[in-house]
Image (cartoon, rainbow, N blue to C red; front, side, top):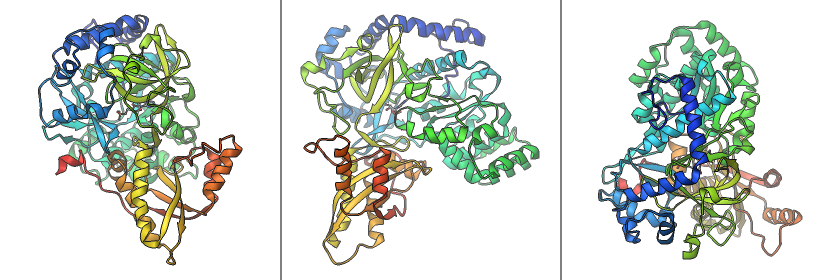
Length: 614
Ligand code: AMP
């Protein structure tokens, strides 16, 4: 992820003219200070949030009565999920400007990739949160610079995109957090800084049309190929999508480099102008790119086209780890650097050891960002495995949450946050494991997102959504006297973009065989039934490919059970898994496929919530 362009008041005492060396030193000093005094800082953060929010309706409802101490807060304020807050959030979305959750005006909603009732969750935010996000960004390069020197001597080729935004019925903008950040002056008006020197002009990042944005960013990246010393995107899936795009469009891009023009398919005048400002004919470079892209193998293409690249800056923790082999292939094993851990609710932390192996990556939560609590998992607390929905905590359990400095090494926790923007004891839905400590502040491995069974890009499909979608689709089989006996699913990322695969075992009692068009309808019905982040990935971002149903021979799921039992599963407790990841199981399933079908078209999707369109 790119770093904050602005100097952060907390540690910039020189009015923005400090040298890089000083800036780096101050950033590292800031990290030392806040991690050494993590508990004191957390206490202050909570007290600040609660004293500012003394008048908010939500806290008054629980009788906090203006108190700001941890003990009372934990005693009276419940731990909640999004569903608990939804009525309050809906009021804000519908235009109620009274201080419901936060005493400061809600500036916009950040639309999370986590969903509720099939729609993106709406996270209220306030203007000052942008500064907190910038603060976290501004710490990334000083940390990185300790491990990879000379990063101020070249450019970063980052593929960054904005997504569409919508307006709530009350008139607030609703958009993803990165769209909000890239459109803010914190990003667009950043002062010149060698660490925020990107190959993509702002106009190409802010172009709302995904094809034109990607095309122009690649053109600029290729044109400045020798200046590039680091490459990246937010998530691994986005970076691989860019390489795939290059594979498809390198002829056109080379033509543009050769002639110093930009293909007419890019019609956005601001993009054209920004690119044409520096693009000049460069036949030698065009020949070079053409020769490399024209070779049979694309192994190591990143290092071949951008020979000075030192690392790839992308998140490969969590579900993104499925892309590590592809990135290794395209880069000949360049270091994969995961720099930060953040969400729409709040930005949390950064990786202080950025060259660590992806499987070892841990994030240090920065104590100034919000007030953190941790719900130990593996108990009767709503997380009993990957298939459970969160349940409300009992009163006593509300108080069992652990503070930042009290977490235990090796233990797993669900993250709960209280933010400046008006979330109180909110369950983020991420499971983290304590991997170590930086001074007093814990460092966490990202374990998983609770309940998610399938994910290709930023989509997160849980088991209940999948079950409903499959049930809707299986209705198509009824008129053929066929029933769906068993199913499971798999996120197939061997193709780019990746796609969901469903394995179906059906039994047919009728005489008529089922025509392929019916199975295609089933594929589409599943897609239509999945949440809006999935459908946006299919329709707008093209980051997810058409869903596939593979019909397997009858008896396949018995074989699956035999396999599980041979691996030690208990026969009494065995349930067919609704999602599979383990290679031998996928191999077994694939060996018994008798037919496969793809969704014939994209499902429906419109920006914003479905209720807002009517
Ligand atoms: P969103 O609210 O849509 O921005 O998504 C935030 C979620 O993305 C987090 O709650 C995590 O589940 C996931 N996420 C963010 N950063 C990371 C990371 N570094 N590693 C793994 N997952 C991450």
